[in-house]
Length: 241
Image 1 (cartoon, rainbow, N blue to C red):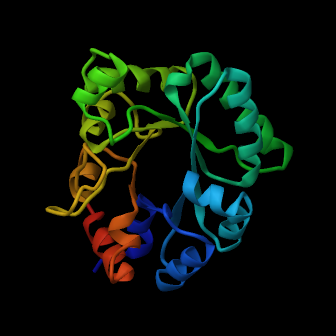
Image 2 (image 1 turned 30 degrees about the vertical axis):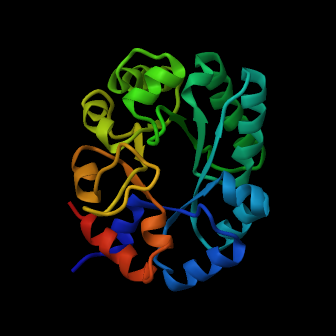
């Protein structure tokens, strides 16, 4: 029998496309949810108060705002974000090593100011919506996606970040390089034979975890299901490896 409490630690529920009321209804249906991801959609809709509400409900938070700007601006954003109590905060690795190092220092300072444990900053590598053709044609990047992800993960690690965000396709070779303490957070998780929507590089739960993913981000497959509680339990069952 699956221990949902343990396996739910591996699953981060993306609250994209939802408002506060939708979130409350989801959490009432699935009280076993441990981790939630607050991205741009929910954050812009409800503001930072949603983070306090989720913390009060005992949820761990991945604040996924993907900061990307000049070093000073990124650092100041992480200083403030670290005071929300979020366990993970994302920023684009391609902001550069200076920005990442400054952001990491600022996050520690911000959390310390309010007596909170510092969050782990996660470097975004290549979004799961990108494919090789788009990378070459739109951005004129001639590296393979694997090469690019490896390079950006190295920047994240050397900058002192707590991990990175990558697709399931890159997890296996990154885990061969980085220890378990370096979080590999993987979106693009789908059930086998399900609609991949706007994602290009996807995988199922068991495969991603076996390849070395730390945690999996799952959104619409659960939140837009006719039976979210059933789907959540189904993913938890598959998260036992």
